[in-house]
Length: 258
Image 1 (cartoon, rainbow, N blue to C red):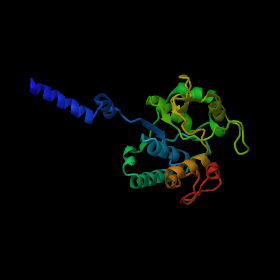
Image 2 (image 1 turned 90 degrees about the vertical axis):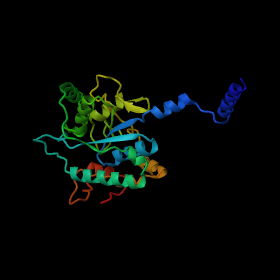
Image 3 (image 1 turned 90 degrees about the horizontal axis):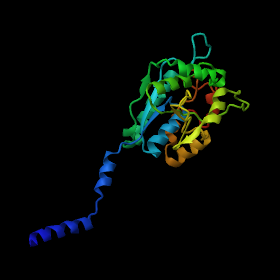
């Protein structure tokens, strides 16, 4: 009897000295971190978002890059000429992050190259019926992003910054900006279109209301300005250098690292 009392007392004494919430601890150990599925180009905006999610928010980031021909057509004069430079930039950024943030960079998954995007007549037709092609370019990457995100049943992030749509001197009126302005809502901390019938329902716009200057301020404050400076923002590079004429060059708020 005395032995039993002694054992009970000892257990109580240990519990008082070392209180443990076994249920909370078990929940903590089994909880999976949120995965951010991010369309990344190595550009200023999407690179900022990658750093923000990885470093500030401690999330797992799965980046995606579309190498499929999605933003032009066979007869279109406009065609991307920066794919090689974007891939080079993303590789440079990933290697830099591994050296500077050896622990947090473990949550940065290997870049997924999107070579094929399934057709979806509903999304394509609705996208163009709503005139969501920006800058008067009927063929662009956003419609392809919608199809890919829908086909994979994922909420995927886009590094779009600013919603124009009403003309600002440099850009004409466009349906894309107008649609975002009228339909984006703050959905649990993310800006998205909650209407399930919308062609962009599977896209998130986490930095759409943050200016490029504000991004730089945040990056400086949180210690990854140097990473953002490695980003690439030119559509039409010439001999590996920025053209300084395209809209991406004009909008960039920090010097381009060559």
